[in-house]
Image 1 (tube, rainbow, N blue to C red):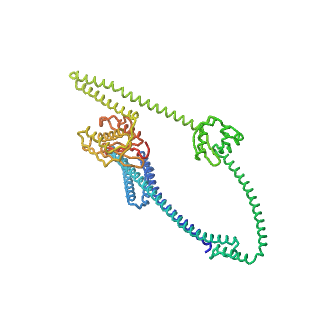
Image 2: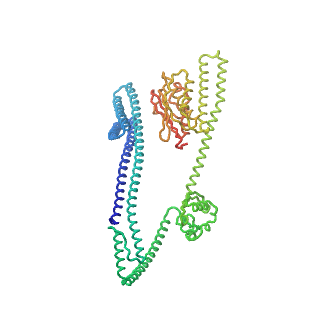
Image 3: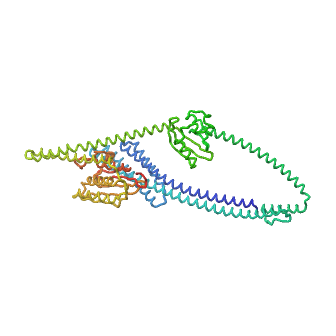
Length: 636
């Protein structure tokens, strides 16, 4: 087998392994594309449901024929999208089935809304009111189904992206295994071929050394059909010819002299090529110089002795100098004030450690700020920098504005705290004097006067409670929080026990399947649970048994908790008022309270970097959610 054939075999094996790797890459790419397509499907469902929600709001606000047609077209296109979806896993099939059922329910609720609107045109006033109430319930159900579909679609999205991650991991290990196996087999083939060639080459080398030593009777013992064997046979034939005749030695010497002349000619040609290559290098240096001059950042280069070797036009403009004032001069001679400065310290660090440095510095030479990047090399230092004076001015202005806002917020907070605190004294006086008045002149007062004094004292107590809540709300921003890992189950038991103690006559039932731990300030998070449970107990006073459910779960970078009740609920149209200070969705004659509890909840959760929101339906209960960032995400 010839060397060319062996090399061809080696090359073909490498090509074959390359084709195998390409095939594996195509297979893995196809798997990843399929997973991504499933993730995109779930995203399209989310978008479709969101669009359908928007059109629903439009129709509810203005029930026109055009809005109805738009909703039905969007509902139909979303249905086609859901029906086309295919998933192999049973859990995803179940989620998809649930999405389809909610989609069908949404269509039924919307058709009922349309039918009610048609009936309203012909119905009497009382019937029209009933139809409006029915429509409100249908709209709420429609929104609930949409929210569930969005939530399920998000679950499909997360599952699809988890599957993508698994496929990528599987692909990585498969490709790595194929590459390593290919390299191992190719290396074995190359080793075998090279070893075979090296053995024959060593034999050929030893034989030629013997022949060169003067033993013209020596023959090379290499057999075979490859090029080395042919070369060996040629050597043997040449040796035989040398042994048969020395007469041709003179002629051979002459031929060697001719070969020497040819070698000299080749040497001269090599010198010419070296000269031409030198010219090409010179032209390359000129091109490099032009490229550096065209760089948008300022640039200059120093050798290891600090001599300037290059500088572009932008740097010349920045320094306000000419090129001849830099090239061929020492940097510290040009800028002696730089010795001992940050510039010298960072430049020497880059050269001594062999690593690039980046720093912002104020240049006293031109009285401007610069962002400097210095890159060391064997020849010296390449420095790129750009003028960031305007950015520094903006940062300083932003810092001053932030300081002013913080001071204003603190001043406002201190003011509200002082006002609330100072209101206590006159309120205590009003309460004391009204009590004294009632006690001393009770016999002289008729029933109406006594009722008015009771109203005064009740309002004083309400005002005191309002001040307490205001002080608590204001104090949240003043108190330093101590973060730690919290046992939410223990905090829930404490808060629930407190509600049971202050509501001894109520039938209260707590349902909880366990809460994941949280990371935050214990007193603040406990206040959140107390306020939400108190809210739930208060708004279930019309129920024989108040059923309150508390739960939580980890969701990516945060942990979500919720408190759900079976109480009076609220109208979602007014949900933006839930967390405002002194904002109430029910009258004080229905439910007691100051309207500060949920505002305190929101402030505590926001100080922890979390979110809070509420969901409810009139006479069907309410659910309040809040999130706390997980400790391992570094959010705190």
